[in-house]
Length: 302
Image (cartoon, rainbow, N blue to C red; front, side, top):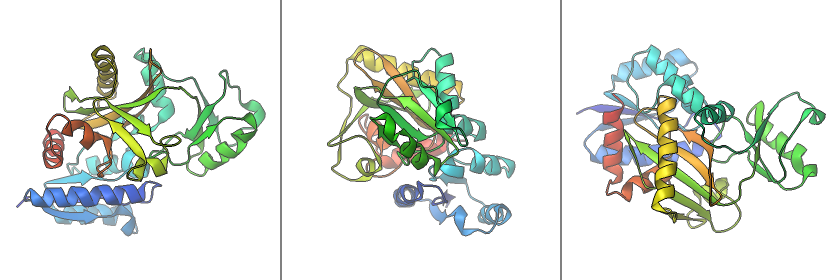
């Protein structure tokens, strides 16, 4: 029986989401006949002990169910690469590029993929140094983060400082981004294929942490209610971006759509695997169930 070590938890702001993802992955892979074990990197006093535990387990592969922080920014990936332990998903450099929203936006621009106008605020800057060349409202968010943690929609300039302080709790660099009205869309990539576009439609407010992870708070439309032309266009943008950063196995690219143009928001190299997650939803619309998805991720990661 092949052993799979599922790394989960960690110490990022997305720890709770990771634990849920890992439980679903554990149950599915166990039912497929794998010998599964969950390991939390935050349980170890140092990196050496963590790596030694992984070596002792001699896994067929490590399934990375971490979200955010060191699990998604390339640090864990770099450790596993150094230790020559196979793991699911993209490598360390790809993960680092994708996690950095500012760098991702520069890559999108280089590919001629539109992205909302933005300003990078760095801890220690004075408010007087902020030179924003676009109108309110703003989206203020940690530059390295996910699950909508630390994000604020700023509708009045007087609220900007509080929004920056909220984001600075999670990162020393904060992205102030132009708000794009319209639809929120996401495209899943599995292997060499893109899957139906998912539209994310919160019942109330915007797609914050609560609406993202509370059942019934958000409506998901798959495939999204956009024309075949527009679907193909945004799928091509997503694939081109994922290919440029050398994404591996699977990923998800998020966009806003104002009815005429798509705007790149961010890339996700470790999409969630909860019951409300978007990647399982997208592939399911093409007849791929959760167990098959996980098996494909494993096969594509070698």
